[in-house]
Image (cartoon, rainbow, N blue to C red):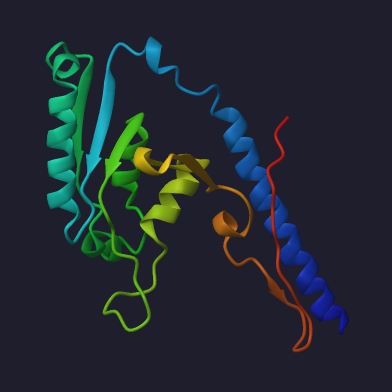
Length: 192
């Protein structure tokens, strides 16, 4: 390994550590979690996405509004439509989530989001990050919680998939040091 290759690897590692430290500091600055019991009004952002997303998300919002009818009528819950997370709009600004959409998402403590297109090889779309992954990172959505209940089978499980640490959130931050030597990074945010 040459000195230049070693220096390059050290600089990339330094950049990764700096990036993750800044992320950790942003998380600390966010303060406490939302105490939903103390909110005067709960705003549910309805973000349709693209493809069949707007159709199924609108129907899901309609059902949710029906189930929460009393709270909606009393003004405790409101629905806010958030447009602009279509693949066409995302490609136009070349971002996983356009800035104006992200600002609207951040204003809603609860988001009902429809499917979004993630470009794949062979698609007509340029390679941009998944809107889902970008949202998990930007909003620090720590866990994906998936309850599974099948009473007749005696199944009452809840699966938790961590969303904001390690390679899943950081992505590929590996370093090709030489043709024969490479390394991959995994980060953990160890909060006390």
